[in-house]
Image 1 (cartoon, rainbow, N blue to C red):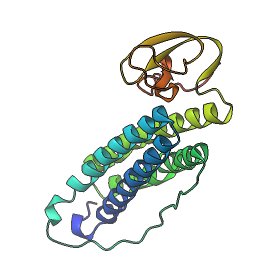
Image 2: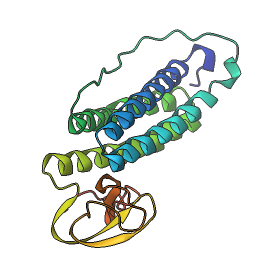
Image 3: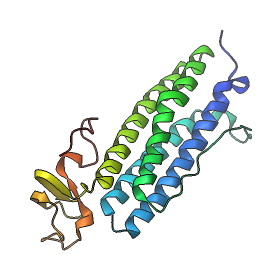
Length: 206
């Protein structure tokens, strides 16, 4: 039996999702700035890319509330405080949050939306949950590379691309400076991670 939207739990879940995505965007923007200060420009780009995608998710959810324009929706929710001077820790915190959205939160929201008859909203929750899984995988992969000192060093010959000018270098380590644009090592990333995705597979880096 369909539920009137204004009386639905789906309406509140959309606002919870909007709030969560909006906060995630800010957390990742803060983390991007922190990574940049530490010279980890490639990590800055990972956080910034994800922040931009979280903004897009927030807009999708927010747009579903347009029939309530001018009104106020009151919700309760819990949101993480992810603060650390360690960039790898920030990425692992982000990974946890993204997996939680995929494994639990959006799956639950989608089920409720279906039960209440809001199948389009359920579709959005389902598909955005899939993106959050990729976000979590990406954060986990970069955190692992950072912790194992493999972000700019490889055990095998690898192609590295400068994110500033696109110069490609082949070797076991990214150069200390790009010979073309002279940007420092922090701008280099493994080719298979550019632009930060590998067909959804973030395993088996050497």
